[in-house]
Structure formats: C-alpha cells, structure tokens
Image (cartoon, rainbow, N blue to C red; front, side, top):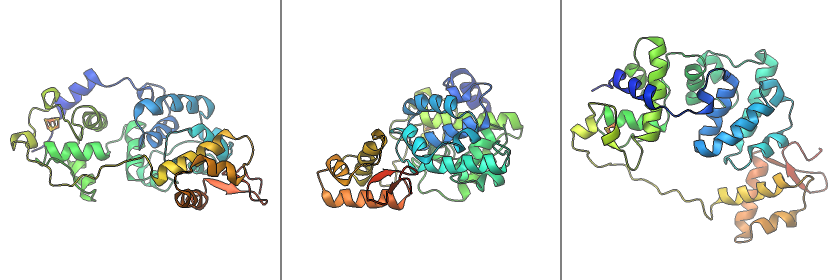
Length: 291
Ligand code: SF4
C-alpha cells in the first residue's frame, strides 16, 4: 500500500498550521534554527524563543559573534541545551566557511556541527524545496501504519529513508509539500497514543484495513520529575540567572533531594561543556568563566 499524495497534499493545503517558520521570506538559517529547537520541544514553547532568536541573530554571523553563555541564556528552558551549543558552533562554521549562508546540499549540510540525517533533509526540503525524504518520529509512525499496517514504527533503521523516498511524488514542489504534509499528519492526526482516524485525509490505511492490530512494541513511560535531566536543568537555571560566576553552595541549594545525583549532574554539565569552572573554583555558563 502507498500513500495517496493528492489527498494528503490537499488536506495540508487546507489545514496546515500557520507556523511562523513556514511563512514566505523566512531564510534557511531561520528554518534551521526552528528545526533544531523543534527536535525535542513542542511548537508552543519554541515559537516565542524562535522569534527572539530571529530578531537577535538574523544571520549565522550574528550568532557566531555571541558568546556561548549568551546563547545558553537565550535558549532558556527549551531543554536539551547541548543543541544550543551545537547550533552556535554551526553558526561559526557557516559564517567562516559558507559565506554566512546555509548550504542547500544534503551532504554538505551533514558535515556541519549538530546537523544529523533529519535536520539536513528538513532544511533541504523546507528551505530549498528539494525532493528528499524527511523522516522524523511522526513520519515513521504514519508510514508504519498507513503503508505497513503496524501500530508503531519500531526502532529507526536505514531503510526508513529509502521507504519514505519511494513514497514521494516525482514532481519536486509536490514532493516537498508531501514531506511537510506527512509530518503534519503525524503531529496532529496520526498521533502516537490517540490517532483520530475519523479526521484522517488518507482514504486507504493499511493499519485500519487490518483491523488496527495492537502494538508489539513495549513503550517506556518517560518521566522527568526526579531525573538527572531535571537536576541538570535546575543547576543551569541558577547559572543562567546569575550575572557572574557562582559559588558551589548556590548550586547545592538548587537540588537538595539527592546530593549524589546533584554531583553527577554537575559533572555531566562540565563534561558536556555547558558550564565551566573559573580558576578559583566558581561555576559559570560556558564561555563565561574568564579562563
Ligand atoms: S487512518 Fe488513522 S492510523 Fe491510518 S494514517 Fe490515518 S490517522 Fe493514522
């Protein structure tokens, strides 16, 4: 079974969300920023920060000139802050080696810091209108259901790209729209837990035809409260709010429920290069320890 591209594209044309990074005039750099932010953070939290970043760093060289600490502060609470540092690194490479432009070629994009298989193709497709398979979790799930009749996609595999590419219309502009539509369908209708099949534009879905067989994948419930990730976030909050490097007790107070976990979180932030220590042992955001 394949996917009815006409039905999908018509649905997208009529109902697509009016997201700011989809509007005319948005540059490839600004789309790249949105893609990095959206990878692990919902649209509603990304949108205000993205608007700020577009105004503040409209081109890569503007961000390249900022410090790591400035970028981490501006990242706020979007989570997984290593993304911000990698994007900063990417901005420096774009400014220094690519004429302050984001390249259009997938292979060149893949050579940039922090740009993986998904982001490279998302930029090539959404910024440059190319016919490339853009495969994220949502797309994998829609393909698993609509084409293969499985409730869930299972683990990512190299064949995901080939399979999705085979579904793309041959016409290049339509292929780009199809990719955007497939992602939108997975984000809004064919969701992980409660797909609203009654609202789905696809006339033939293998999973529905097969009687909606249950998933064979064991889903792990992701919790946040009490995790190392939450502890890291609390420590970073302290440093983001402080104009100057802080002493260790200020960090200790930010996470009192488990001192061992706090030490582990602090070590991992140092190892990841998100924070630094000054020569006299104070803690600061990356680039702000004055070493
Ligand atoms: S019919 Fe349901 S399961 Fe099939 S693609 Fe549409 S939303 Fe997903």
